[in-house]
Length: 204
Ligand code: 5GP
Image: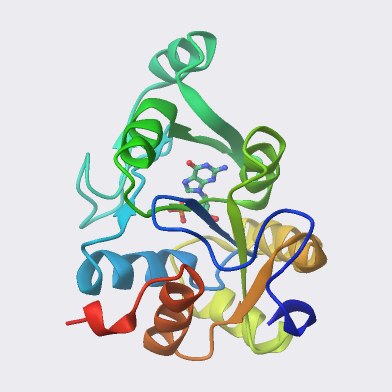
């Protein structure tokens, strides 16, 4: 855990229910897998569904994993101020968090989680400094590289691009309230849930 204490200038440590938690970290650290584990085992936590201009991958469901939109729709959403944050990730596609859904869930007092990249996390910190920022990190950079190459869904140029992004992103750990090592997905998810001030007994 960062600094051995969750209290930082950003907030009061253990978040209240209904507080926004932002999960970020380097490429291929397994943020998406942790988010999927949250979706499966902790339905009480509301997980934001991002909009993206990237094409869907096999098995991804529109409206569940992402809202897949075209460039014009994304443009319209940014101009209308509908996104809480957005970023070009890996120098390619745009990803953003629809603002209204987050605001509605927080107003209901439900715990909400964003799984986004570092640029997005910085934007949220600028506009919602009371949010709780969690950095998911690999056991080591070597392990991160293994995961990056092992995933096999990108070509070699894309992998090299993602690795460069990952090295820069690893340096951002100190900006976060807490760090969680993703050595095991289930363990990391449970640590995240307990950092959110929720009981892991909700798990099933
Ligand atoms: P992928 O294309 O593999 O699903 O995701 C690529 C990256 O985009 C991941 O690092 C993920 O955290 C990030 N990402 C997903 N949704 C959002 C979003 O709404 N905003 C930002 N800034 N990044 C996002």
